[in-house]
Image (cartoon, rainbow, N blue to C red; front, side, top):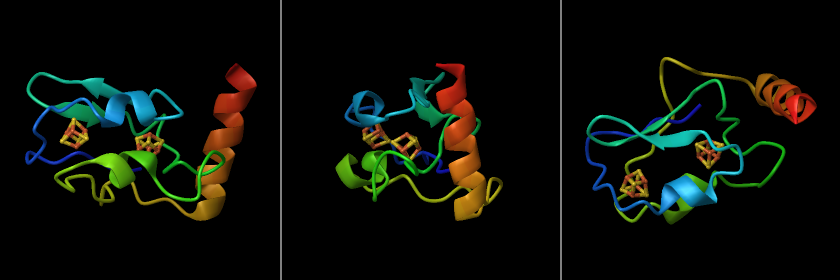
Length: 82
Ligand code: SF4
Ligand code: SF4
């Protein structure tokens, strides 16, 4: 999963472009739910939030490092819920 750092300026650009609705407004800044973030695997070649964030504050989350296969499995699990 990716994570949003404190450099976030709450511009609201990332939230609507996430295909998994993983981004939400937290207490102070936008946040990413790691259970929903597939790093855009299954939807896009590039993480959309990273692509559109104007201040480049969405790195990989070191606490949620996942293989491509794990991300694909998460994507398939989320699809099955729909
Ligand atoms: Fe959503 Fe993709 Fe960003 Fe993860 S990487 S939060 S799935 S837009
Ligand atoms: Fe914050 Fe970047 Fe999302 Fe804007 S696009 S709300 S700066 S994480």
